[in-house]
Length: 175
Image (cartoon, rainbow, N blue to C red; front, side):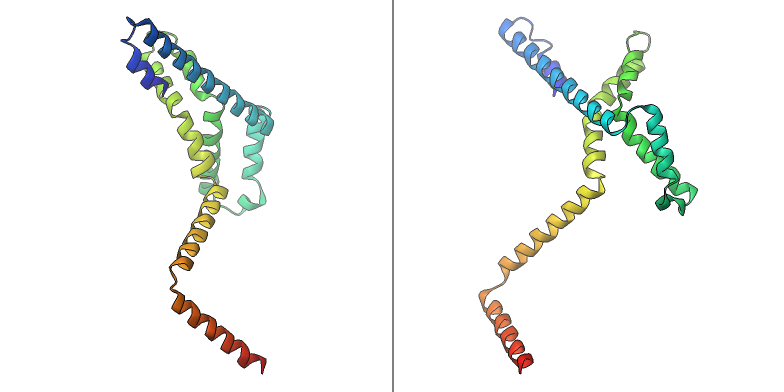
């Protein structure tokens, strides 16, 4: 959103009201982004203290009982996935930002802008879309929704027929 506002307002410098509104909006969006990144960082620090603990965590995860019987290729894929989840959240994009200060390294400026703009997408992807608990919850929600739709579509005549069948069957078994 900040890039769209910036691109739309870059030429609006003549009108001071519009220019001020765009500057306020950009400051608010960037302040919000940094606050959310700080909150995510604090959450991650609480979950895993520093880089050595990340290495220890990945090592312990690879040597756990659940992965002990897996092949080296499966262990590699799981380890690579966990590293791909953790590293962007630890601010890998800002390492690129440190290199993008020099005007000679334009490639780092493009990489920094690209990865920074995709950071929210990756957080959503790894924390929501690829999260097994979220997918199981969504499947459960879909099943309940489908069952509710099927219940509401049953005509009253067939419901009465089923009720008569059940009452007849229970009377048969009780005798």
